[in-house]
Length: 140
Image (cartoon, rainbow, N blue to C red):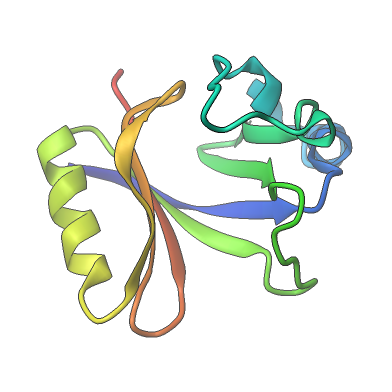
């Protein structure tokens, strides 16, 4: 079952600061912040020093909704005004796969579905209209 659709902000190295700002400005509850440096080391993909403190995923609860944020990886293109994605929260891995496959038709895969520290099944696609979707399974 699809649980909701929420804004996902992509920041350029200042996501931790933005989390604090939105906590205060929107009376948000901080549900967690994870950095790239918290991932297990991978010798095939060494993490640059400047990436270690960047946010890979943050989640704020604002009333009955969520605002999620992350920093782009160093070196990725960043365009002010184009940093909002749409996050779809689903409570079933099979439904996540179904939604992911439907949204990628005519579009492109940005990140294949995979397990992450915050989700058993997470991926990103850009649909045929240019909208970036972050599809995530939430196990409650």
